[in-house]
Length: 78
Image (cartoon, rainbow, N blue to C red; front, side, top):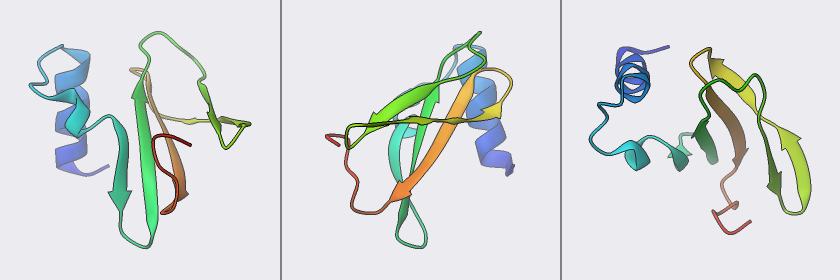
């Protein structure tokens, strides 16, 4: 994980992040993809529905940070 990502995780886990929605939620990635990040402390798993289908998210950090990569066309409404 890069330094900026680790800093965001540290701020989230210590409730110091000034604007968590700049990090959490759905965000653009390179290569026509997006990433969805959610923070669910104490959860061991996390699922979400995309286009009516439930998918299991990947635990990116033991603090409760989960991620899922989606195609560029997906929006927060899907």
